[in-house]
Image 1 (cartoon, rainbow, N blue to C red):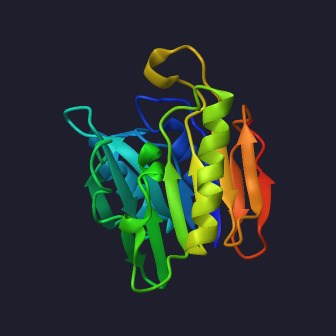
Image 2 (image 1 turned 180 degrees about the horizontal axis):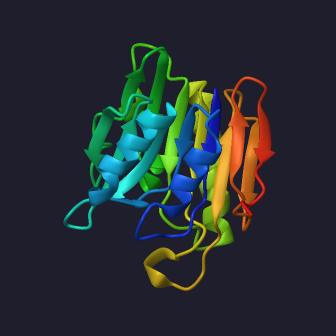
Length: 216
């Protein structure tokens, strides 16, 4: 499977997403950050997914500006749509979904620290996605976040992938480390970047990480 990991700037529309899905018709799935999409743009995301036969994993904001998780398959069908879990509660369900022969897990931003109970499945989860809102607010958080992702990959024997926006900061603190990562089933690093917002394509079979040059 070829997975495009994007680190877009926060946009009011879908400029970078539209460009990425149109310019890379050979990818199987696109992973984008938490809150990239507005609820009014969901029909367009579904339309593009169906047109280019590409699954989409990201987060969106609803009418109340509340973050939600979603996965759309290559036929433009919504497979998962749920609210973000409050910090004091167990991980909301569903957090696993089947897409034809693929089985996915989903943790939205800080849900990555909520334990693995919500990712239990009768079948092995092949890939876990972690859309993140903004970058890390410190080097310590960056190390904690990537370390937790690596542990989940090893414990679940699953590839885990995450990405944040290229801009923005936690509660407007003014400091942000954009992050994108991928660890394989053994916890080996396929991608681990900070302050590098290039779009990348991960091949989950060869474990190769290809950087895409900006469109001219």
